[in-house]
Image (tube, rainbow, N blue to C red):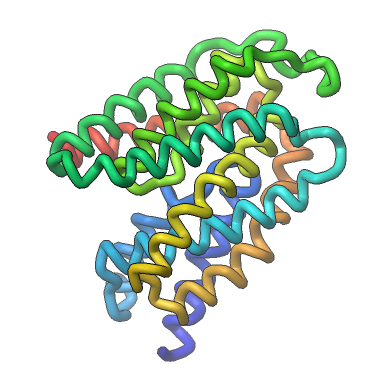
Length: 258
């Protein structure tokens, strides 16, 4: 555990958490490949896929706390939306997690690939006038929100991810939630959905505590900084960055499948 290892892990956690806070996604979509591939590039010991998923789960839990804390003022957190979608995604992810035992790895990846492709297409649908709605006048179909979060939770639970990159386009395109409210509320929903994953990984001994601790410190510093940057950034630019990350995720998943 030398200084190069500590700095590398810290920087991976910092970059991923900054993007997480800024865009309202858990960040594991970025940190997972970074943790898997970057340490060996610098001659450091490589993590196994199980270790990476364990470290990511703990880190997402703390990154989303930091992001939500930064967004707590200004009316960005829609408590009704968080309650309906948060409870549904938690139920879905538990059911999906147990159900995944009955599915082949190919079947699991295919479900995730289809969900990611739908999310990518949705991000490129024009969202005119979305951010002209005053935050205190935002209305949405509660039961549709709950149903969609349940479906995302099932898919995310099956593949062991938080699923925030699927939630964001649903909130923007289907539920017509303004960009900054989507980002803040999705961080809170991802926090709820990450509770189960974090508890499961710790209980089954899949967490390497020292690198996880470094990542948590990085998360608590970087995620609020990312959230502050997200508040100041033009919402069109935020949507473009989100669209590119979600598209890249979809391409990566389909390359793995094919």
